[in-house]
Image (cartoon, rainbow, N blue to C red; front, side):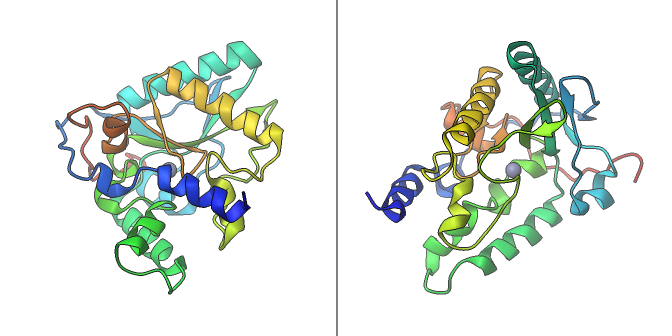
Length: 231
Ligand SMILES: [Zn+2]
């Protein structure tokens, strides 16, 4: 099979925003908490667009934090790895801006609903996005402080076929990168996170995508306006 066709198959299997946009949210009052660094869990990268909102700390819902600690413990005990969280809560305004940019990257030949679906594979449609609910995280793994090979960096968005290497099942990354993706996914799913096939680094707990993945009738966390106390 040609590589283009392999990617087309992966895209067909991916959940689209229409698969879960109708799922209701049973609103939780659970608080947002900062991720505190430890031997097994770190927040080494802070994206620039997060700083005005949450400062130099990464926030997630309490239930998400508990599960991150659990995943990190599994990875640390089994393989001496560190779970590094690159993004947690993201303001809705930032999500909207990013989605707009993703839409602009879609080739002009793709139109209508397919245009939204294509952009959504890179940046979630704001209405269903898990980051503004404090429910989604972008993570990678470190060994002795050095990032493992995942075939791409975190958020390595590129045009064309090369840009599809961020898909979890990408056929043209090395066996080592594929293995590392599997190790990460296994530990995250073991703690209750739902994976996202469009980005090897993205996982969520309690958002609509999570509800769809685990066949729950409601999501747990609503999108919220939040600001870090230091900002
Ligand atoms: Zn993400």
